Image (cartoon, rainbow, N blue to C red; front, top):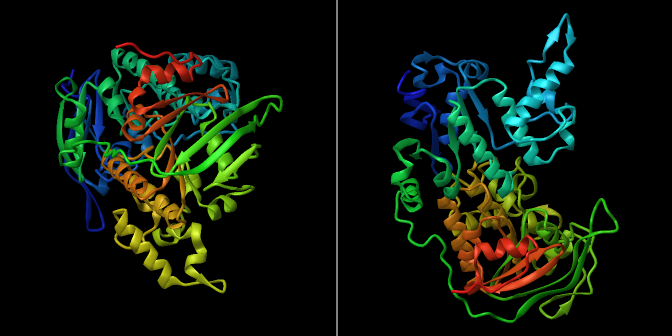
Amino acid sequence: MAEYILEMRHVTKAFGGIKALKDVSVNVRPQEILAICGENGAGKSTLMKVLSGAYAHNSFTGEIWVDGEKKDFLTPADSSAAGIEMIYQEINVHLELTVAENIFLGRVPVKNGIVQWKTMFREATKYLEMVGLALPPQMYMRDLSASQCQMVSIARALSRDPKILVLDEPTSPLTEKEVESLFQILFRLRDQGISCIYISHKMKEIMRLADRVCVMRDGQHIWTKEASELNMDGIVEAMVNRKIGNMYPKEIIPRGEEVFSLRNLRIRHPYNKKKNIIDGIDLSLYKGEIVGLVGLVGSGRSETFNAIMGNMECTYDEFCLEGQSVRIREPGDAIRLGIAMLSEDRKVNGFVPTLNVAQNISLARLDKISKRGLLLHDKEKSYGLSYIEELNIKVRNEKDNVSNLSGGNQQKVVLSKWLMAEPKVLLLDEPTRGIDVGAKAQIYQIMTELAKKGMAILMISSEFPELVGMCDRFLLLSEGKIQAELGREQADEEVFLRICSGGGFEEKNG
């Protein structure tokens, strides 16, 4: 057996005159999980596109060796034939086909020109069991949740009998329980002889999963080390090439006057009119504070935000901003009154991919850059450049297309859009999802500066350290109600989980 199941030797890839990969060498051992870490723009995705055959072998210099044999991939099919399967962050399934058809896409069993449905369903069930999905293979993909679709993608990869499984941010659509199930699957696959490359921004996942860790930065391989020799701070500092100090720049800011209050908010369930998703909650926010709205997936956190913004039908007894009673019927009302929301999925609800950076920044306040219905391009440019500088957005100029930016810089463009609206209240739904640790630290610093200027921030996050690091107090949501309000000194992951799971609040001793 070769020492390495995979070797990528001295890979260099350029786009125009810019080198995205500079003499990168990476290897993977048999029965190993190798984590590859790096900030957005470090070259991880480019390296994986080289490995997947998305970039043909004649478009870069360097070599790929699989199981001791040199390979030249012209297409993704060549890479797959060599035993390499890719699982991407963006779920890639055909919603109008069945689960079984998705698993055997392009390889449907046929005999004498007739599809062998029983054979396909039987084999599909076998691969679904491997990923822990108890689903009928005849189900249509459109009836599955995002996390189930992701697991079907993994089942499809396993059906091709891979030597190497590459997973790029695979846990984005998964709940904590599903993440743990995925880890158990990957451990089992490793023990059965399948090696894995795991790409993630989540340090907790990497420390839990990886046998070795590879760090990339600015298109270069920095080092690969045994995970047992590493800690989170060491990995992050290698990624960003500096001491990170305190990841969360929290400052205790004197709480100002109440700026926002909502009494007895109720949101109907979209499919069950006899049930409320949110069943009578009260919310208050004060100037200069960051409040965490804490709950499990499905608890109604995002629905609460959307109701406040006028995106969902709801009822309430009283809604006040700065002591004045208000009524919000649509997002335009919320924006005019001084409420802004950075949504969970920036690619769906955050920016317009066909517009440039300056155009996206000005979207929420076109009145600032127009006169008598005509856009003033000089003003658009001026505001764009101002926020690019203020939020340190990495672009060549304000005319760069927002789709070409890294996730962290896209998030800062969306945040700039809402800051241009001059909100009194800012709702942040998973503000650092899918961005690297360096960009996260910058988002946290921006949040701190906004709080110091008197803005009230209500925040949703699935990352417990982020909540504890940034919030002044916590509202714990379960079964449609706020079950507890806790201060920073009471923040405890076990307590949060118990309350949000319906277990109630008990003071921890010691």
